[in-house]
Image 1 (cartoon, helix red, strand yellow):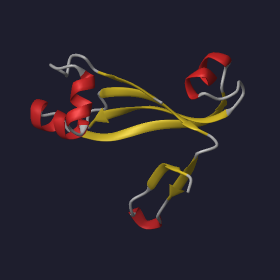
Image 2 (cartoon, one colour):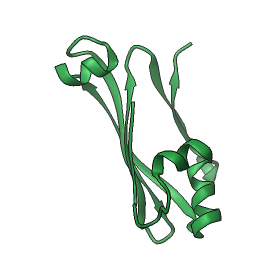
Image 3 (cartoon, helix red, strand yellow):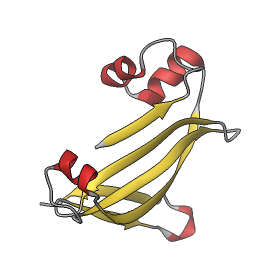
Length: 112
């Protein structure tokens, strides 16, 4: 489940239409000259409330990974804020870090 809010001052179209048609970063660059330079997230485990569990068709207390954060420009201007929920029984967090400045990689992946 994804909850994402985009800075409305940036978008001239419905955010839902934009994200369905093109990659958001490409859209921001091509249509608005806004270059995204990073994302910052917090990841936590959470047990679902009754209300939340209904959305996943799970029992109250089921575990999920919650990823919450923003995407920002080079001057740290936040362009979007999102909260992602991943079922604990279907996804796992993968973190890869390289010494010496190599690219780091963090991903939530569906279990095989």
